Length: 347
Image 1: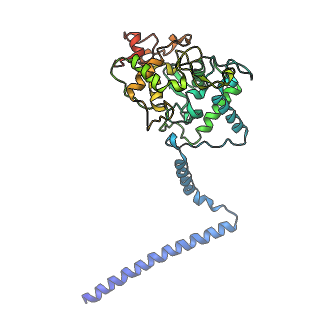
Image 2: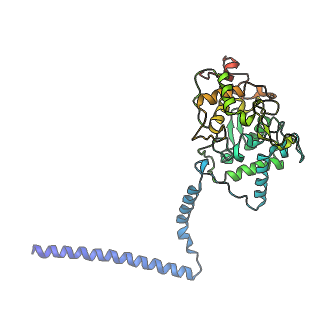
Image 3: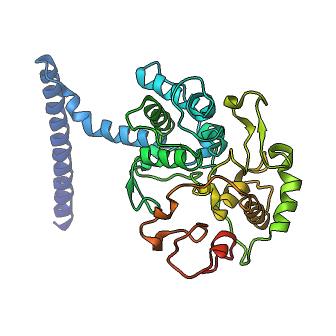
């Protein structure tokens, strides 16, 4: 009797299992028939795949996002009006004195020296840890302590023109400004908006806890720098009788260099740039100079005379945000100006 009861229970389980499977098959059959009918009536059945397609698109966007500038590859400029404007921007960056310099034969003068934007933003602004342009249009607008406000990319570009180029501002609506912004946007197209990527800015540098040694800096300069920048530090022009052609190797001080309000006029900024990029052949992964050598030679370079930026006392409305190595007053502390310029920066 008990054996018969167990057999009945097992049979009932099998019947229920078959019934469930039958329902699933029936539901699937009804769904397929419904799709066939909808397609026959001209209804778009792609709506069932929208979510999946969205996920695929998101994953594709993630895979295309640049995460390190060393992996960046310059894309051809598209054959569009925007592409043509970006191509012009590249020319202005690489051949700045030819198109915008004090001796240019093309139009208005916007720079006060014959440096190129590419003198600091190496390889047309594409070299990692050399203040590259890649990703900048994804970051701006961004807060600027020097301006004391959230600044646009155009305002940041004009900061370079007034300081590094010792010149004047480009009108926001000018062809030149639009071209430069278009070029930066072209380089930044694979960077997520609002995101920072590896290789932006400069390398890290551990500053020695001492005042810069100018004598040591001079020794480093003579050993590592004079073959390009010349013993007098005034650079090597592309053509001696054609200043509008700019420099093969830019001057590091003197009347045709950046002014004392430029970022490179700050010792720690200059040292970081030098460590990651100088002498030629150096990189962030394989620097040639040590932190101490970069520190001292940066101080040596910035010990020479250069043009003076007007109204730089108006920089950093909130003096608490002024960098320690900003070499000009006013300051938010009682540290001597000489220490702000040469260190030690242990305050």
